[in-house]
Length: 151
Image 1 (spheres, rainbow, N blue to C red):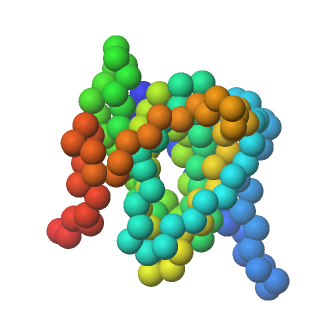
Image 2 (cartoon, helix red, strand yellow):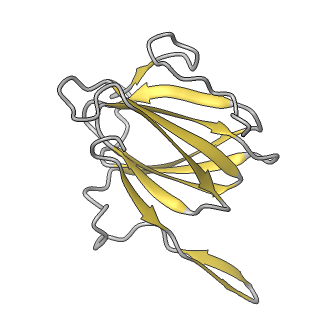
């Protein structure tokens, strides 16, 4: 487990009209601050990553489809420095994952349908001074293979 990552199991409440899933509340332990909410999608097999932030954290949930969320801790002095963490999230595993400040993260759509990711950031995006560092998904700086491992 990467230091500072938090996972909240989400409950899906179905009824005859559809379903409801409460994602984040002001009184949740995982809540710290609200900046903005964004939605991004990825088509089947597409990888989005790597990125990290120095001033904000992200809380992410996949609300449609399935995604493999991967995090890499390159924070100097962190108790989990150099560690990778992956978790499958989405319709079949409804969880909210808090990604700490300074941790690289990305995701791959692993379902046969487009994955819909909702991100709740602790700070709003600043267009004049973006708080984002990006690396290509296949960078040699992060020792990770995005392929699905059979076993």
